[in-house]
Image (tube, rainbow, N blue to C red; front, side, top):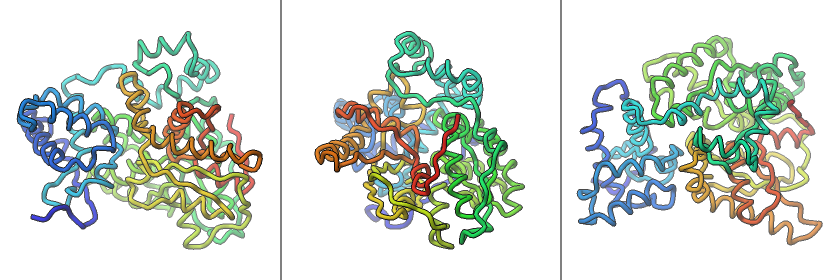
Length: 459
């Protein structure tokens, strides 16, 4: 037996329809097998709160070993997992094909699937993940919804905390009256026929966030791609199911995978590439769906056709070359590489993309923000999320303070994250580090659009 493994990590399909997947005794045995290996290794102690909680349980137990830890105490370990995948992708030496076969995030997912089957996932937690329904309702009264969810609103935020379990200080995404799909139907950018990449065609999978919360992100992506000769269409059948995955609702995720892959199949058959605008959604289409529905040909074809938006622009740059017109940015960029972008195993594509801008000064932060999607806004998790993200916020805040120390010649860098929710979370952390007002985070594609002289405003 070798210590660790040198092969590229692989993931096995989730056998979630097998009755053994939810068998309590077999699940507990697998938890104990994996936790014991984690206990003897401890390489992941600084990634998230799951591992410190596990190691504290063991160290404070009667024997100092896992055998004296009650199975009921494992719940606290599972609850702290954000499914960021960083233990699997960057730390664990025992992931498949190593014979120990450790996939910690998917084991946490299995536990949550069992919790859901037993009715242990709260109603409020499940309801806030219904992004399509919630966003459609909020979008109809966007001004009121944005007022109600505003941080510091002493009238509504305590009520949201009491009823929905959303921490009163957690930053929440704003809603727009018009969706990305509606805006895209109303107007399409002119495709640059002189661009080196002219002839490419891509369908943008809008994602729930870009469709309802930040359509400007999608419009910026369309404008940049049109400048580079790419004909685009915007499609949004439904949410990718990442919020449901967080709660272990694999049947719901499978249904969404079938619906989206069927809707995008005709586009793929017509030669269109598929671009996901948010890395969590790209991860679902590329990797999670094929593991949940391993025998589905449409899901497999969609996985093969899907790009993250930054990945796609870099591919254009390397294959045909970008269209001219990029101008230097007025400031540097502090760029956070989102965990779900890193988990795609494509390299730091957002950083590569921004460095295509002349004279670009890009400082990269490659660490988890701690947000974890809907996980990080919950009352019981928010402060833990802020603690996990503190190193990221501290590094971003330091860049702003250093710029301020240079006086008028030191313009504070822009804040950017591939994950919009992570970006807002980092900005909150920067406030705690003494940066007031904290900068608004922008997606890298929005910054690239600015370098092209493209300004987007979506109402």
